[in-house]
Amino acid sequence: MKILITQGHIVDPSQGIDGIGDIYIEGGKIKEIRTRSGGRKAKSKERKAGAEDPGFQTIDARGLTVFPGFVDMHVHLREPGFEYKETIRTGTLAAIKGGFTTVCCMPNTNPVNDHASVTEFIMRKAAQEGYCAVLPIGAITKGQKGRELAEIGTMKHEGCIAFSDDGQPVMNSLMMRRALEYSKAFNVPVISHCEDLTLSEGGVMNEGLISVTRGLRGIPAEAEMIMVFRDILLAELTGGKLHIAHVSTEGSVDLVRYAKKRGIQVTAETCPHYFSLTEKAVETYDANAKVNPPLRTERDIEAVKRGLQDGTIEVIATDHAPHHADEKLREFDQAPSGISGLETALGLSLRLVEEKVLTLPQLIEKMTLNPSKILGVKKGTLKRGSDADIVIVDREKEYKVSPEQFASKGKNTPFAGWELKGLPVFTVSRGKLHEW
Ligand code: DOR
Ligand code: ZN
Image (cartoon, rainbow, N blue to C red; front, top):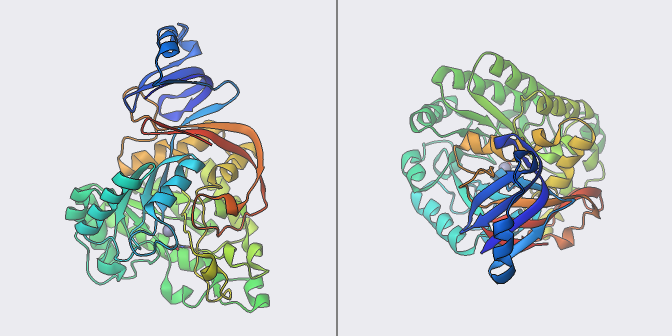
């Protein structure tokens, strides 16, 4: 299929592009990209060819914005083992609907992705049924139990692009040290779920006034910060490549900023819910707002935004964590943590541009180029020769979040009914065009 996208506002931080231009796609690759400032009027030859060729499609992107397909380095696709929550098929469909064309799936499946055979299964399923690129993240420890290192080398060979015990921290510091040593040897990032379980045990929300008045066990910010600091120290000790998952607290932002100043190799991500909602969202015992780490305070939101603004936090990931409605209907204490995030991430993140926390190119960089760089993958760019992964967005489109319309099986969102602005109208995933 040949596709010509004309006169869209192209934003591609990997090439410093922020202007009107055209993109020509052929054979699943970007053949040509031209911006108006580049001089020549683009694509008259392709335009003519298109008139006769039925395999040729032209998209008039006037008034629309064209980005590299987003790269989400933190999703839970739930397959194998929890297909009632999500599958590779439904999760990747949710991804492309949300504008993501590459997703990295966490290993807390059943069986855990702690062995090359599980990695191979995921890669095969994704090739057969996936709507976008799926890059698996292998477990750091066997069964994510924290006792024995998984076979990082063979999993990397099979296709894992990073390692994490996400959902669980690696409590044993020696184990984390070894993981970071491996990460250095194999040049892959270790993604750390920072939570001191001895402090968070039994906790279901942020620790503070609201947890006390609601009679819910709290998780202090320190449970996250202690582990962020430990891992920063271990990254310095080992020279390993550390990436901090889902940063939720002011203290964690400060610690990552400090580490970067010292020249330690550390990167960090946050998720839309950590800059959009506070712990107040769980006041009504709404389990759809139950997430781990928990939603924090206004002050933490401000700190996370500052971290995004000054580059301390270079990635926005969703931590897409779909659960079944029946599970979320359990009483708050018993409900599983997680938010279905792929289909609200863009609308929530564009608010940062409205609020002037980030410029549009800065936001897009955190959703495309930065995660690709951290993972060492050739994604998140519209450079000539790259995979044709593109999202075309109507930034003016206002809509109400309705979970029933999610492609994801996970309808668990605390943003139901929110009015957001900015929706994908087309997604091109590896050269295949999807219209929404
Ligand atoms: O809220 C969360 N849900 N946090 C995690 O760390 C794991 C995730 C899940 O797997 O549901
Ligand atoms: Zn996660």
